Amino acid sequence: MSNPMKVAIIGLGIGRSHIIEGYLPNADRYELAVLCDLNEDRLNAVGDEFGVTRRVTSFDEVLAMPDIDIVDICTPPGSHFELVQQALASGKHVVCEKPLVGSLADIDVLMEVEKSARGRLMPIFQYRYGDGVQKAKRIIDAGLAGKAYVATVETHWVRTPEYYAVPWRGKWATELGGVLMTHAIHLHDMLTFLMGPIGGLFGRVATRVNDIEVEDCVSASLIMENGALATISATLGCPEEISRLRLCFENVTFESNNAPYNPGSDPWKIHANNPDTAEKIDALLQDWTPVPIRFAGQMRDFHDALITGTPLPVTTADARQALELVTAFYQSSETRQEVRFPVGRESPKYKSWRPA
Image 1 (cartoon, rainbow, N blue to C red):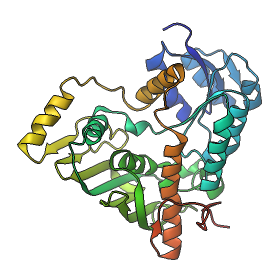
Image 2 (cartoon, helix red, strand yellow):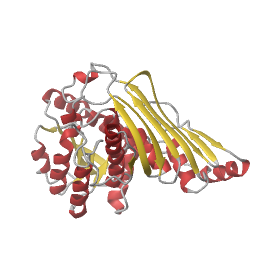
Image 3 (cartoon, rainbow, N blue to C red):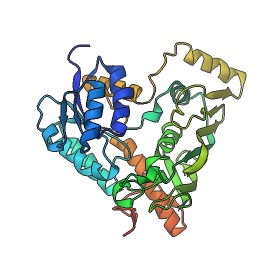
């Protein structure tokens, strides 16, 4: 593919994973042109590793580069709101790691900014990419699954005190939240990706595993907009890590693999509840082409959307839906009441869910 788009990576922690998993597998679509990080040792190490000669410590310097098409923001969450706005104002396309921002008020501002921006903004939800979840999505969208009944979602991972030794982690001001924001947000996005919007939530949050400011255990009971019931739980105190979704529909039951950091890929259990549905699923999937997993799939589809002008594979509306769930969780846990969706300006947590 001629004239690949030039990318600048901002922040080389998770940014290195974007390079390895997202941009290198799509080398015909993207050129890794600039690296930016405040840690010069890391900047030079990653630059040497991937042969990138343009290395800077100034975000403003990146925005002033006329040849850069895409700015990929992989900095700590507390910086996203300002950096995304600056990047859009400079005319760049923007990719931004989750969580996109730290409140519904902030995401609503970004959605307004995005409307008049020359560039386009794509939040990261890479767990949507894998053959298992994409097959399930195709079956559901084709109407073969039928009525949604119930779902369970488990994000049971482990994070130790060493993980929280990184200064910005575990703090409201910089991480913006705990397991809800930086870990379980992936599986919760997959739930709504497959089963549709949430109608209401009763949730609880607690800090039980580590000595940190933010939560590391959560559970909730949900009713989906379509009437289905769902239960979700997450903890950072489970050494035998799993990420698991199980969704029961009228005609099909879906269950993800349990891989903690790649739950979208096969093998998924797709159990048709009757022979007629099984036959229709076989016909629907007979021409299946494997999907690039995680960042590789999302970055491929991002490039295609930029070239064709079609909808982005993940949108700010998707990010808002994820942050609605987070907002409702904190509100419900504090008030001990169910929160109904959509969540808007009426919520006491609309401007911020962080403690005063």
